[in-house]
Image 1: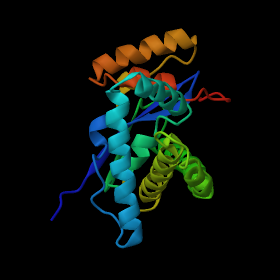
Image 2: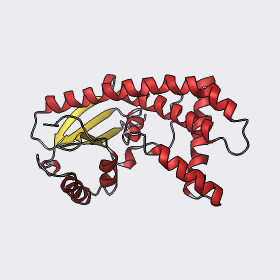
Image 3: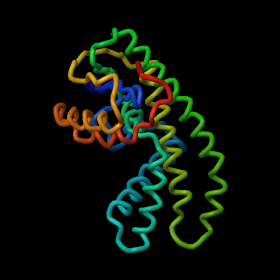
Length: 227
C-alpha cells in the first residue's frame, strides 16, 4: 500500500502581495503515475513528453535560433502564475499541511486557503476551454516551417491547466487539511516592496527554502490589504 502523501504549504501574509501560498519543489511530482485510461492517457503522456523535450531544448539551447526561442518562451512564462506547480503537486496529496504565522485562528487560515483554491480552479477551468479552442489554430500554424512553438505552448498550457484543476479539486474536496503555526513566518504589516522582498529572502534562508524569494517576486501584487 502506498504511504500517505503530505504536501506542506507555507502561508505568508504581507501588505504588498496579500496571501502567498508556497510549497517547496520537492513536493512536485516528476511525472503523473495516476493517468486516466484510453485516449486521455495517451494525450497526457504525449503532452508530458513534449514538455520534457521542450524543457531540455530551452534550458540548453544548442544554437542561436534556439536561444531566440528560449527568450520568447521565457517571456511567455512570465505571464503564468507561480503557484501552478503547487496545484499540480496537490493532485497527489492525501494531506495538505498549511503552516502560518499564528496571528490568525486556524479556521480563518483554512477558509482563506479554500477561497484561494476556488479562485484558482475557476482560472484553470477557463484555461482548459481556451486552450482547447485554440488547438485548431495552432495546428494550422504547424504548417509553417520550423519548430511549432505555438502548438507546443498551447499543448503544454492545456496540460498544466488540466493538472492544476485536478490538484485544486483534490485539495478542496478530498485531501485532509491540517493547520500548523510557525511564528517565524510573521511579516511586518507595513513596509515597502523592497523591505518585504528582503524579509522574504531572509526567511528563505532560515527555513532552507532557497526558491522562496524568486517565487515571492513572481506572485501577483494584491489589490486589497491582506490583513
